[in-house]
Image (spheres, rainbow, N blue to C red):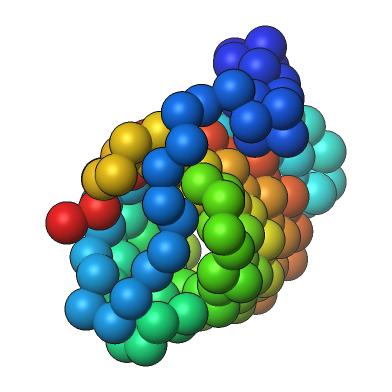
Amino acid sequence: MKRFLVIGILGLFLGISSIASAETSKSDKNFVISVGYGYFFNGADKWDGTAGIGFGFFLADAMELNITVNSAWDSFGDSVSVLLKPNFYFNTQSNVNPYMGIALGATFNGGTDFTYGVQIGAKQFISENTFIQYEIGYQRIEDVDSNSVVFALGLGFKF
């Protein structure tokens, strides 16, 4: 799993994909399936797996509103998070489109806990409508006093 993430990140910086437009425009929509690995600071301090799906739509040329559902297998047991993530893009003239944003939502793990965080990432287009998404994010789950840093790699489709 770690090798998969490292190879993907290297691909981002080396630009090994074909050239495709990374421009975004109002009313673009996308769907992403992702896997990740996170470090959870919750007393056990350990690495655990994550998986998620997300649907995003652009409210403006450089602003996406994303709804993400993530599952984590962490030290507290299995949990599911539902997050609303406004992301702000830095449109480039290449096939890579970097972004940054915030996350607000809830985590369900025997109860409902307020969750918030920040993320940075990039979408690397490998064709006109297909991209690889790289993201690193910090999340805080309030009621259980948990912090995590998650590295995620996803495959997405723009429509």
